[in-house]
Image (cartoon, rainbow, N blue to C red; front, side, top):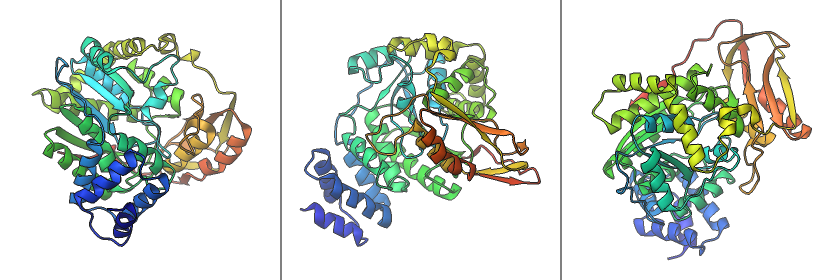
Length: 434
């Protein structure tokens, strides 16, 4: 069997066998297949697609490419959550401590930024001293002790996905249903949690642009999860607008802290977090979602979720002083106000362009080995439905270089459209798929 023949077969639109997909995944994981051939294979899959059966084969091969996590030594019901990627999406930072404060166990392995979307691990690394890698026994012990632990994906956990994840990011093969589904579910199945809630983003800032595509992805992942013995639910959520007002690593940590302290002014972020946490909590208990909402809101209101977050940061070596006082986060060298060039209601925002602008500022990676500027990013002052006047400050950029502002400003401004009338408000949650 040769990888050349497998690439050619998929390039020509034929269906691959389980053995052929296993040959590709195993060969790339162990280094026998180089990046350039793996890139060709990814592009062939991107252009020709995979059948449902091929997607299951790919997920299984990636799940079994390394270790699988045994969480049976955790005392309690485990639950995991995953987002398909969005702009300003810091929900894990909020819902994980919420669930832990309600008595559930969150043993979570998260990823880094991909394309124009941010990554939970990159955000947590903006906290001085925070350890995103822990020995497995310490990982389990922390979950048993305080109810949650968030670490980076282990090098031995679905290592095929870790390699492909970085390669997809730089070869324009990210937004493909089969590749996204297999990437997410291979990690979720290998991670071992009993219950899984998926946040499937939909809109201009998501990899799935339409509700139809988002539902197809959600259905694929839910079916994979349920057929593998995991109770799996997906929420299809709106990503036509960045979630919250802050985009960038430390900026998003600061905004998450505000929500956990019940001080946030981001209704969309709060609402999405409450819904995700409620479905996660319901999956762990016999309680109905509406009942769970009341308990979720209570632990946000009374400070228990914030204390649980701070406990996690301390347990993983992070500086809790910045959690208590976010003003202590390292500031960017340059701040720059972006001025509106028009009057009117903001009628639409291209979240992908806004995410790209934040990457250019230094908040993400344009190449897989690029360093990240943890203080870089964007803080929005206005979103869809707001009326602005010419000269109002739409947003503030944070970066280390003036040239980065020049490169990202035009992209950012082109993401906005204005109208004379108030636009119709879109729903935040389109559908729940079980």
